[in-house]
Length: 272
Image (cartoon, rainbow, N blue to C red):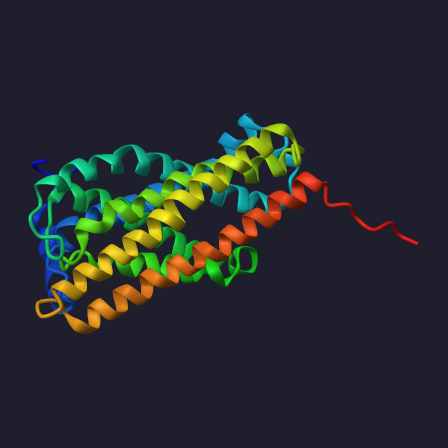
């Protein structure tokens, strides 16, 4: 595909960031910085609009505790992001068909799409740090690793494999629907059971099966081109990649356990 997904920023804007990114050896990042920043701001706007929208979509939202409403808003943003990325991101698989270089290949279109994901991970990192007492440190690690991988693809480096890893978002809408059902008095319902099965199935297929295969495929390509691949960058990239893969295994276990408890009803012990 020719051209980017979004219009380019003014030359002065790109020129402002070029010296910094040149020092970091991220030669293509200045071209897409406006998409990074714009996406992060859009997702923050969605977070701010979530209370008003969610109150109209669900009668349960206004009566939820403050901490639960914050968590709901985070899931709401995640849902918007994942749907957008799944729709637009699928075009990256078409775009990369013409690429001859899997290690250093680049296109403006794919880089713009990746930048929208990068903007989300930037927003997610800042939000996870702010609300770490709600989300836990695992989400901070996930956002940081994902942001690292996204940023260093603008060397450019391994951008060819970005569509593969962004396809993980296919499972996210089911994850968020499961959460929303849980908070709207439909815990253990037939609808939640069906959604839970779809969640586990898609999560297992795209994040575990496809995710680990993609990690293997990426590693083989890096090894095959080891003489032309920056050693330290390759090692850090693979470490970040594997961190995400192991987190996915942990979250799969937690999801299966949560679904099992929901279906069983989670009987609470009676007070003496």
